Picture 1: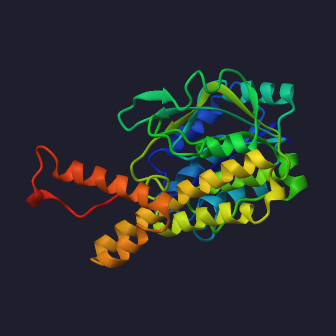
Picture 2: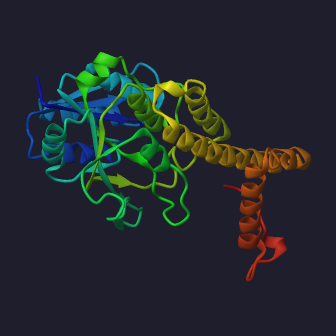
Length: 325
């Protein structure tokens, strides 16, 4: 059996897949398998994956019979993996050289079930920066479920920070023994929900400051383009945990969970307001913006920002467009 199974879900990733796979093939740790899961792509992703597999026996291709979304594709990869550890890799991202060897060494040393490194965020212009600043991840340390939730709260000073983006090295035995899989009803924040499920099962989750995963930011990603229904599903994840507080922790966890739920409620109702404005249903938009004081203050602030951006200095009312996100 290989030490690490690299799982790469791919949907219409013809333009980036070869580079992503190459970053796994170039790792100093050679005892790996690379599982490309084609999620019923409509371009030449599957044909490319098969060519890559023909050239390297470590590469294997799994073809989904129908589009199952990111969570479903990940589950196919998890089911096929044979390595002691699983490394998730999105089809437009890349591993930095030596990543797997370094994470495996750290995970074994600290007895982690999951060990995530810092992300190297790369924008569409090629500029990079670590997602977590030095002070936030000063050394490899354990992370609680409450820490994880707080790391997913919106922060205007660091709008790109989200612990749900992390791509940890995961002990496959831990997943198997606890029967853990992705929630296939989620097509947004599926990693967030999966990591919370791991915490609920008692996972020892560690975080390293080393930025060894190159995370490419795209304006058209599912994360950037979430819908009202996506946010409703995310809210349901919080609701399930709130209704069963014994699953993942004590008072600190519940406090962090309530804060996270509040932030999801705010973003959801802002999205509902936008949808109603686009339909011309102004009264329903007003009601949606008044769903509790925490929602009203958030929506009011967002509206003020939009009005200033569109009608402020240098803008005219005649050029203002419908409010969008």
